Length: 279
Ligand code: C2E
Ligand code: MG
Ligand code: MG
Ligand code: MG
Image 1 (cartoon, rainbow, N blue to C red):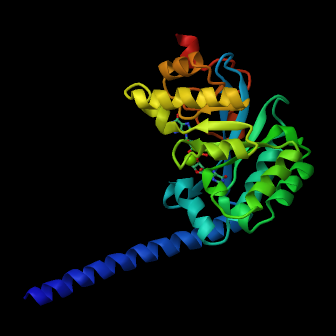
Image 2: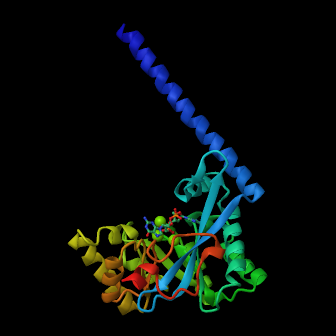
Image 3: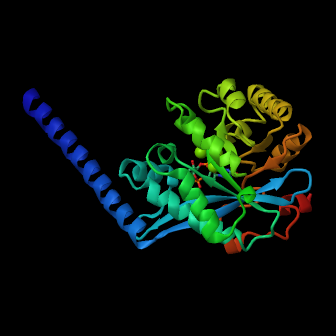
């Protein structure tokens, strides 16, 4: 009986594995098709000056609306695109669409675009970026690329050389999700970053955790000494905005100022978020 039961458990486990594998391969197939048919959409979220409330930059965030599943998170489909070898194509699409879109924004508003570590490995990132700039007409100084530490952990001179070349063209380089990886100080000193983005987990815990406040203060101080803009991600509450502003954080991004949305939804005129005006 035990044996039969074990066999039964085994079979249902295999069945579940099978279902999961099937679901994944369906999602893969759908993603290939979405990329091919141009069903991905770029949304934008503002980064505001914490002193003035002015929008200084917008981050391009990729969206996939699946016909049956609805919204699929980029945390799910970006890794899938990487696995399927589609990330260069997806990356080109985001850069081209976003650069074109940014041409209709006020000229002081910059554009930031997330770049996958794999785009540093296989694709020709530099020529993809230069192409997107020249075909849209956007000046290099208005573009920033957001990378994570994963890019820098690649061995060899490639990432460093590409980053130097991008900087030489006038393109900004932001270190995204700072504080979540190894957060090696040597990265900050050895690469020509123009911006550090403090990961949203620190802002989420700011109120209850003295440790999060300590990290936030340290990164702001570091940024100031290095002459690098510091951004706080994930600002949802007025008290978080006020704390970060008083500590000298330059820019803020989060639902308090605006959720990611289609380009037409970004309100470049609103100087202060509603939450601040109401206060
Ligand atoms: P990220 O670059 O760190 O982007 C910030 C994420 O935080 C976005 O999630 C944004 O919607 C979310 N966020 C912004 N404000 C708040 C807030 O106040 N509270 C909370 N809880 N969340 C907030 P999203 O759009 O789901 O993107 C997730 C990640 O997917 C991004 O993290 C980025 O790593 C990746 N991603 C998105 N678009 C692209 C893309 O075009 N290319 C690549 N390579 N990666 C992308
Ligand atoms: Mg980002
Ligand atoms: Mg981030
Ligand atoms: Mg992230």
